[in-house]
Length: 308
Image (cartoon, rainbow, N blue to C red; front, side, top):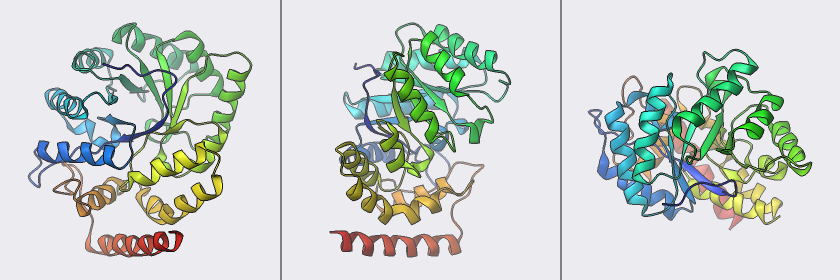
């Protein structure tokens, strides 16, 4: 088992959870999509996140999904989302997946946190609950949670909670947060890994600001991997050209309440999963939306041919 460290970089794709049309977990498609992500350039995976429909799974199903993915990954790093309203559930699932061989646990803030001291104390409590040897990915996603972590509070968490080795950066606007974190590290603060979410909407700029890669999902994970690789090597113009070719679909995926349906449609079309079904409550794409996605895919393919 390889544990996550503050040196982690690259692309950790947020994996979908495949379901049958009847709503059961499709474990054969789960195997297939894990292989697909790594074949397309992922360095690791993150499962049971918000876009993995974790909130629709039972604890037993969450453990079953984690075990299947960790085994399928055959030693490649798997981060498991263990967020829950209470610490007991976080501790139970966290212990289970770490025993299976997970690389670390991702935790976000419950909406009940209202003050800076509450936010700071919460992550200290999470660290104590998970145990001192468990690496933590702090998911900073105020657009979803409603909890805003200031630069100052985030800095205090990094100073005081050594188990936080990575920030999953999803603040929006939030590029300045990356800049401030890296400046503080240059002045002596402990360095952590920063991987960015938000569907990759600002990925070239995030890498330029000092992020180490992406922790997000997209129907074409090879784009994420190529942009991170080229931007990290300093080839920003080519990275931007590649990103721009996919940007219309990235933008379309950002529709609240519809983005996962778009992503699953594309993954099913590419053969990574058998069905684009979301577990209820959740609906697939209407015919008009499918037509729009197909048009974007055609234009994307033409643009990529021009680039190559």
